[in-house]
Length: 473
Ligand code: TRP
Image 1: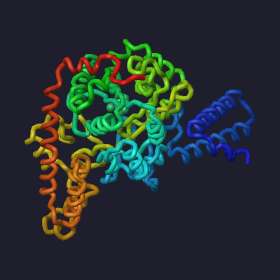
Image 2 (image 1 turned 60 degrees about the vertical axis):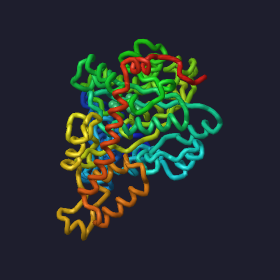
Image 3 (image 1 turned 30 degrees about the horizontal axis):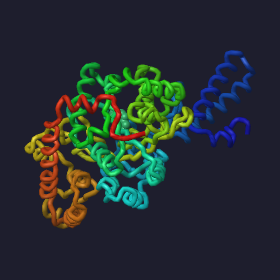
Image 4 (image 1 turned 30 degrees about the vertical axis):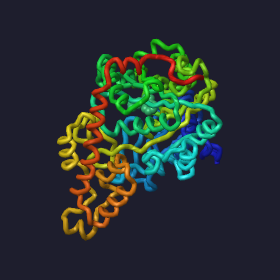
C-alpha cells in the first residue's frame, strides 16, 4: 500500500523517524504551494498521518515540529496510563509508585547492565575487599563496561575515577553524599586517581544564581566533599569556572565533543527546546570532557588513553550516554559507569530530595535535635494506623522511608535483616524503627561536621590546584 509506511520504517530510530516525519511534512507543504494535483497531495497527507501515527506508537509521544523525541522521558510500567509512568532525567525524578522508581525497567530503558552477584564477586576478588554495602544492597545497581575496567585492572592497567556535583546551594543533604561515600571506597580499594567536577557554570545557567554565588558554593561544597575523606595526594577537585580557563587539554576536549554532537541529538537526550539559552545547549560537552584523560595532562602526563570510571546517580546517565556515543568519533576510550538509585525524600520515594525544601531531607548542617524532629515528624512510614493493627498485620519496609535510609547507612547486615523481620511481623513499631535511624544518623552527621571543621581554606586550595598526583603515568 502506497499510503502506509513500509516495513523499513519500523527499523528506524526515534530520531530518524522524527526526521522522516519532518521531511514528509515539508513535502506536503511543497506540493500544496506548487498546486500539485489533488490526489497527489492527498496521498502525501495520508503518508504523513501514518508516519505520525508510527512515530507516536514508537516513541509514546506526539510528533511536534522542531521538537525531536525525548529519549528518556517515559519508562512505561506496562500500562498506558500516564500516572503509571516513571519520569527520570537530570532535572526531574517522578514516579507514582511509593516503592520508588522501577530500576529494573530503567536498566532496560537506558540499555545499561545490572550489577549482579557475579560482578560483585569479581570486584571482591580483584580488590581483596568486602564489597561496600552500597554494592551488597543494590544501591549501586547498574553499570556500563565495569567488566572492562576489571579486565584492565587485573592486567595491571590503571584507570581513574571521575564524579561531580552541581553546587546549587550551600546546603548539602545526606543524599548528596552517596556518590562521594562510594567513590571514596573505590579510590581506596583500587588505589587510583580521582577528579571531581564542580559544575558552577551549570548551576549559573540553570538556576537563578549569580556567577559569584555559584562559584562560592563550589568552594563550600568542596569542603563537604573533602570531609568525606579523600586523599589529597590522589584527588583533584575543580570548578569549571576556574579550570576551563587554565587548561588547554580540557577545553580542547570540550570543543571536540561540541563538534560531534548535533542540536537534534541534545534535544532528544535532554529535552532542550529552541528557546533554551545556548549555554545550556552546549553544557553537556563540559560534563563529558572530564571522561577523557587528556583533559588532565598534569595528572596523566599527557596520556590520552587512560580509562575512566564514573560513579554517579542514574539521572546523570544521559550525559554519559552522549559521551560514550562521541568517544570513538574523537578517538577516545568510552568511560565506564556505575549507577546508583536515588536517595528518597523523607516524604517518600516518589521523588528525590530537594535542597530547596528543608523538610524533605536531612542536611549535613542539621543538629542532633533537628535530625530527631525531622525523622519523627516527616519520615514517611510504612507502619499501620494503630498499634493494634500494626501488631496484627506488620509494617511495610518497601515504602517505609526510615527503613530505606537504614539500608543506605546502617553498616551491619545482620542487624538490618533483624529490623526488617521485626518490622514486617509487627513486633517493631514505627517509632522504634525511627529511633534506630535517628541513632544511626546523629553520630554520622556529627562526625561529618567534625571532619568538615578540620578542612581549611588552604586545603581546599591545594585540592583545587591543577597538579601531578601521587601516580606515575
Ligand atoms: N551535573 C551534576 C549535578 O548537577 C554534576 C556532575 C558533573 C556530575 N559531572 C559529574 C555528577 C560526573 C556525577 C558524575 O549534580
